[in-house]
Amino acid sequence: MSDLVTLGETMALLSAPRVGRLRDMKSLRLSAAGSESNVAIGVSRLGYSASWTGRVGADELGQMILTSLRAEGVDVSTSIVDPSAQTALMFKERRGPNVARVTYYRRGYAGSRLSVDDLDETLISAARILHVTGITLGLSDTARAAAYRAVEIARSAAVPVSFDFNYRAALWAPAEAAEQFRSMSALADLVFAGEDELAIVEPDDLVEGARRLAGDGERAVVVKRGPKGALAVTDGAVHEEPARNVVAVDPVGAGDAFVAGYMVGTFDGLDVPGRLAMASATGAYAVTVLGDWEGMPSREDLALMSREEGTTIR
Ligand code: KDG
Picture 1 (spheres, rainbow, N blue to C red):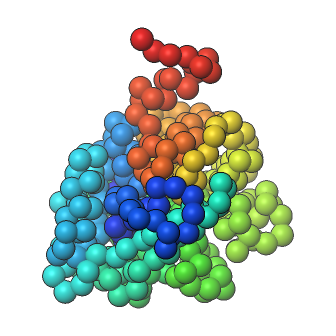
Picture 2: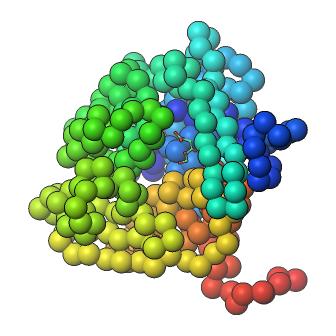
């Protein structure tokens, strides 16, 4: 049984080691990347158990993904090796000092073949939280159906549901996504959205939009604002948290680290400001390292944050 249960697509990630055009790179770094498995790794590094369900191809890249997740302590026993499709690919370029660009080869690949039959009802019903994202809703009809079924199982077992919008323009248009974001949010206890993502469903005012999405205290809404920090609306109250001042090397994956931190803060029994502070610390760690999840902190790392700048540990 796991504290966090999540599902989605994890791809093989090929990242450029330096700034420049992908075509000019003579070598790329191979790793795994998937928003939901990134969250699972973040939670696992901070001492709680996490399970990820997804499909990978019966190929070396699929094995690389499963091996990486196992090495991070994530339970992949419910994941499926699909012999009839390949593992999807994601390329990450650094186009300038501040701009990353991501390209996917994922349509019809193994991860998008996730279906309701892949779900483990017992695992979901025993979780402390189920986490789904908008990526799975936009990935394919079968993956979307799996996400809704997982949520239905969780709700009937009184397991809280967490939903992160995670809008990916390569998967679908904003209007279609907005409809799904509204439907899934209505079923969730905890909703995460980037400021720009929230604007897809609530274009007018950030705080009012977050309040509307939160309903009448029906769910908590947490808005990730990048360098502007974060805010949470819970039971009608608005809590704000400034961003940590760090040198960002790779912002991709920071949102997942933030979500993992917020969940861990909840498992730790912290109040909302404490959860936001934990989330902002985990997000700050993630951006300082190349890779979508490699920079996720351990407890020991988090304790180092309070040290004075320039400290050397000997
Ligand atoms: O949240 C980081 C993700 O962008 C990445 O790991 C891959 O799941 C992914 C996606 O769809 O972009």
